[in-house]
Image 1 (cartoon, each protein chain N blue to C red):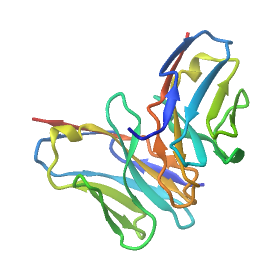
Image 2: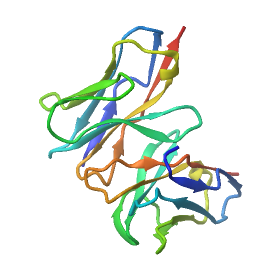
Image 3: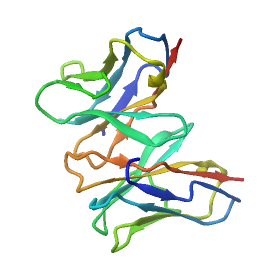
Length: 113
Length: 112
């Protein structure tokens, strides 16, 4: 158990819909990262937040957004969903980011029908 | 931009045989290197990492990896694998340890 929790574990929805994925980092960790894992794209970094502020952006679509709240949990919002958004979404956390291990949550499996 | 190439998508081996999972990276600057393991239906776990210092790094479960700057490689090795090592292994690179760039993964299957 990494100490990072993600909800829900599974999500099935339809095209055009909007969903919210939630992540609680390990106790004491200030940084949260979001990744997408799909069969065709592999594992891709989406976005990082540090202590409530966006720190780095990766291959995140404009239809996707994220935020980190004062209690340090984070949410990833996916809107206008397309079939190709079906993937496993991972959250990871680390204390700060520099030279520190990222601990991954179990993931949320999203299926868009 | 940095990139990671894992040369083998699948590696089948027999139990107690040695294994090497290959990883090459490209980057114009110094990088940090990582190996993560993903067991079936689970999230990723850090196996080992190279930040600086000794180029040979070891994990607690018998894996080791060697950073080779001239060949831009970070191959993962284990002298004798177990059935329980069956998993997908991801090599990753970071310039600042906040954005990880992953390879496509290598599925290691250990057969009895």
